[in-house]
View 1 (cartoon, rainbow, N blue to C red):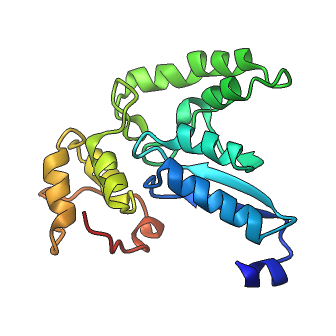
View 2: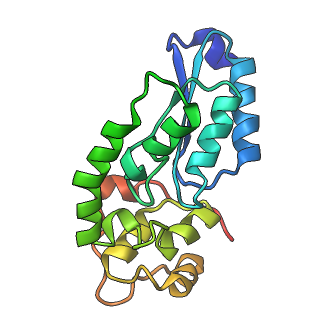
View 3: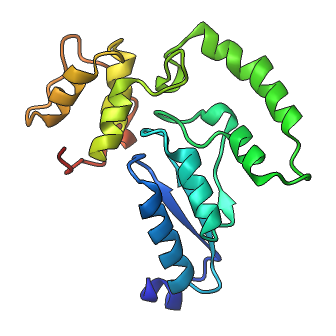
Length: 193
C-alpha cells in the first residue's frame, strides 16, 4: 500500500469483495488499513452477497470511513448480487436521498422480472441466494461455476455442487451447463473448504 500511496495518482481506491466471502471484521480491518495507509485517497467498497453480507459489510465500510458504496435496486447483480440500494438509503437516513422513486422502480420493473423467473441472478423466491452461490461464497470461489450450475437448472442441489467444487476433476454433469463467457473462466480458484 505504501508504494500505491507514493506513486498512484488515482483519487479513489475501491475494496471489492468480488467473491462475497468477507465478514464484517475483515471489511473493518481492510477499510481502516486503506484509510490509514492511503492518506488523501477516497476509499470505496463494493460487496457481493454470496453469504448475505453485502449490506452489513457496506455499513461496516461506511462506519470505518468509506465514502463510496456500491448498491443496486434489490441488490441485483452478477451471481447473488450486491448491496440493495433501498437498504443503504434507509440506513443513511439522509433527506437528499428519496426512497420512494427507488421503491417505485423496484415494484414496477424489478419485482415483475423476479416473479416471472425466480432464478433471476441466482436468487430464489425468498430473495436468498441459490445454494451454489452460498457454497461459492463460503469457499471464496469465483461464482462462474455457480452461475453455470444454476443455469443448468440445479440451483437447489447445493450438496452436489459442493462435491463438484471439491473435486479435482471438476467435470460438469451431463449436459454440461453453458458458462457465461470467457472472462468468467480466467480466474482459477485455489481455495479449499
